[in-house]
Image (cartoon, rainbow, N blue to C red; front, side):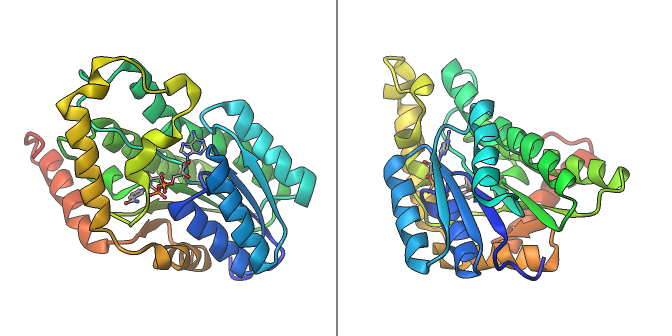
Amino acid sequence: MKDFKDKVLVVTGAGSGIGQAIALEGARRGMKVVVNDIDPAGLASTEEKIKEIGVPVVTQCADITKAENVEALLKLALDNFGKVNIAVSNAGVTAPGPVWELPIQDINWISKANFVSHTYGMHYFLKQMIEQGDECCYMNVASGAGLCISFSSCMYHATKTADVVQTECTYLALKSRGITNISMHVLCPAYVKTTIHLSDNHRPDWAAINDDPYYQSEEFISGKIRAARGVSTGIPIDSVGLTVFTAFEEDQFYVLTHPEALSLQEARVKNIMNLSKPG
Ligand SMILES: NC(=O)c1ccc[n+]([C@@H]2O[C@H](COP(=O)([O-])OP(=O)(O)OC[C@H]3O[C@@H](n4cnc5c(N)ncnc54)[C@H](O)[C@@H]3O)[C@@H](O)[C@H]2O)c1
């Protein structure tokens, strides 16, 4: 897609960080913007910034882990602007710990926020884009963590890997059916300076922190400190909107902020090919 003016952009988790950066870049390019977030204050700040740029904007404050909210987001876009040209499924969260220590509610929360919500997005928005038949882009925001493995934040790696694979398979499914009007993209950033380490502030009610001992554990507390340190080493947010829109312009499927991190993926694939243990 080369021309964005007056086209319609929908972004989930756009109340801060990468989602906000993508929404603002779309607004600067003259797009009409529909933004979702679970956090009303973040959403209001994005809305304000888009209004300052001077393009139409509508907001949905809702939990994207529920299919009916994703369906309602599509309806909101259609009711206001009549179509969707770019959808970015970006909302995501992180929590530390191995799966035997994570409370079941966190297993559900991370799975739904990072993976299932993206699949709901593809279900509703791709169907609409296929019906429209005009030039469209669909992006899932995965992570560099979806291309490599580590001992920490297993759920994060697993859900982000699932995002990459779901985007790849969906690309092939579209191609196999001769559907050519939609370009698929998966964003795999390494560290970017955002507030992702504060994901607990964006828990839906059904995954609120409770009296489970995990939330007082060394694993939980040190994991959060590790995440904050990691994010603090990240690249500034400024370049991310441009990276994403360049990917739309040049039809790049895999979109990276740190191409040098691909060596980690290479190491994983080599292990699989050698039938070695993960390392
Ligand atoms: N920052 C990084 O270093 C980094 C690296 C790789 C991938 N990512 C991915 O980028 C995406 C954006 O993260 P970010 O770094 O901008 O973090 P962020 O915390 O600044 O932004 C995430 C946004 O998603 C919203 N959100 C969370 N759960 C939601 C829900 N259930 N419904 C609706 N909105 C919800 C949050 O309120 C927040 O505004 C995530 O998918 C994250 O996994 C980030």
